[in-house]
Image 1 (cartoon, one colour):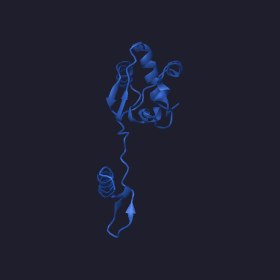
Image 2: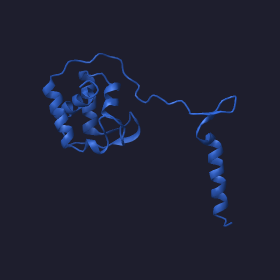
Image 3: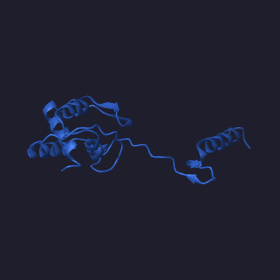
Image 4: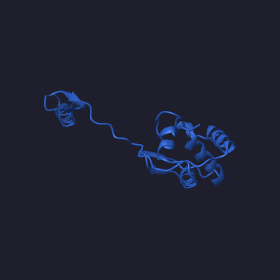
Length: 140
């Protein structure tokens, strides 16, 4: 073997043993899946009523931006699904404003490692409409 392959093989062996081969062993030796962490961490609170035209306007604005490059309505992509964002945040003005600022400024850390790029060309009013639509996806 070449000197390069020996360390790489040892590395693969170490990673396989250290990771437990993709599962955890119970006392009887069966391999079970590791528990899945809930990444949504819902914030308690009631939704506020929002006019339907704001939700529709936000949906149109989202469709004309690059949001769907990283987000999907009902499934994770590079970023969280809009439905998961709606499950985390109640549809209240304080969270609409928070998400509007994140749309404009960008952000990281709320959903793990993905980085949301800033969208400085979006006005605060448009970003509020977009955030309102996103927070309405699981209710609309």
